[in-house]
Image 1: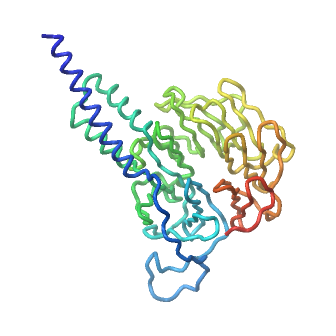
Image 2: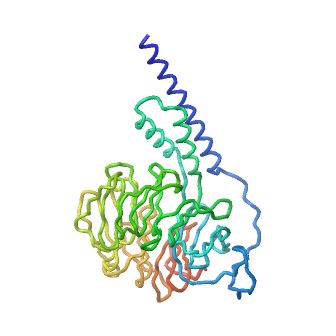
Length: 383
């Protein structure tokens, strides 16, 4: 009889697991687009500044007040997004025609960070493992349903972290506020997403984590110097955190952190793999560094980068692209190749970098956006 009951429990668990897999795969299939016919190409125009009128205008009708400062860039598989102070967020699908995305985004429109949330089958597997480990037995059907509904909120989308702490989501070209994080200390400096782990946010009040796509958050650390983070799969090495004033730290899932010995104090940005084995990080005044897990960080030897203020690092396979502040944009094709600078860039701080459809894009402090073909160093004004 005991064997028969055990067999029934196993069968019940298999049925629930099958139901969960079917439900969430359906959600993922619905929201992750496959091949589809291209949308009709409509003529677009670059929006030019207009003089504001006396009457009250809606978010769509308000004239765009241009600041040439680029706050951040985000490249996805089908679009490049750009954020500017006051003017909000713009999108291009071809690198030439830009459209403003401001509907629903009330002032202040300072998006400091953008991230794409795109669940995969890894997301589903991680959630089912979490449910099983938490219950230690056959999950209750209502518990399983509630967990899957929370997971369904993570349908693909673009999130923006704002200077005033708002976390906003772009749905059907309209922004919606989905949560708020602490605004004191500068707001949301960075959003990072790892499909098999979740979403992390760096704020002036420390590191926060969300397992439902940014709708609710849990405080992980409270260090006010937190500026960037990478998420790893190992709970014992869940976060690698950059601090502008407290160096590089490795933290477990519960928020217990240990500073990486030998790292400079002022770190702005990170670029690495999801195993957190090999990470490049940029400092404020000490150039670009490489950290290999278990080893002491090493400064990357390049006279042009040794004392640079590194604002952003993009890693595409073996290639590295470094937004080196007043030193411009520096690139290398592999670890064994030399560095070469971007040419025709303004005498200004290059603060952001992204790669989209075979082109490198560099955002500047005062002169807008510039681009160059991936294998070229000749930049031209892009927006």
